[in-house]
Length: 160
Ligand code: THU
Image (cartoon, rainbow, N blue to C red; front, top):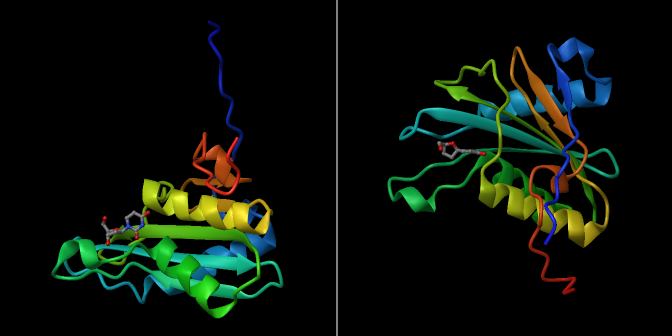
C-alpha cells in the first residue's frame, strides 16, 4: 500500500488581454457561439469554440428540448460538428463561456463530465493534446490537456 498524490497544472488569467492572442480569438468565437444557444428551460447559455490543427474554428452552443435529456451541451455540439464536418483533423483547443440569460459569468465555465469524456476520446483518437480554456470575465483557467481535468481517463483504444 502507498498513498499517491496527483498534481494538476493550469494557468489562471484575470483578463482576456493577458491571454495569448490565439486563445483570445477562440474565446471571442465562443462568445459569438453563445448567441446561438437555445436554452429556454435552464436559461443558462453556453458557447464553445473548437480550434482544429489547421486553424479552422468550429462553434457550438447548448441546445435544449422540452424532453430534457434530448438536449446537448455546447462543448459536445461543437466537437461533434467539428468531427462530422472536418473528419481527420485534430482538435487542439476548446474555449467555453457561459452564463444565465446570455450574460457571461465572472468565474470559469467548467465542462460537465460527459463533455470531458468526449474531449478525452478525440484527444486519444488524434494523439494530440487538447487545450481547454474555461473563460470567465474575471477569472479564466487554461489546461494543457484533457488528462488535467479528467484524470484516469477511460480509454477503450488502449487496454492496459
Ligand atoms: N451545459 C453546457 O452546455 N455545457 C456544460 O459544460 C454544462 C452545462 C448546458 C446544458 C444545459 O443546456 C444548461 O447548460 C444547463 O445545465
